[in-house]
Length: 166
Image (cartoon, rainbow, N blue to C red; front, side):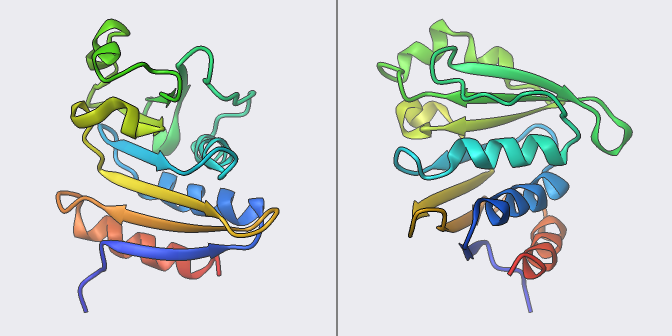
């Protein structure tokens, strides 16, 4: 049976959100954009923390609300990788991406985690979109959608990893 490109996962705690992020970190190739969609306090930054921790980052992971981007260099799987964590909430419009040099962050060896991607308009191109919805104080529902260009093997591995989260 072919792997599905859309998955809905119940996350009863922040630990489950971090586990989902770790599953995506394990299969995410360099050179992609992961869009994190959700209202305020939906768990986007908690997801980013889990993602970076799974890649081996041990320092602080703060929300880039005021800096717009925080950059982390990690070494998963024995190769250096740069992760750029964006928060576009304060962006006035897509044109501001040009002013902040967004194109310079898009590199084959980098992963871009982007909170509030709707503020970037059509200039952004997600490989994976994670939509988080609060369903309780600590619980969330996540919908993960893979772009059709993402390798089928990655989606199948993700399905196996997600089965262990539930």
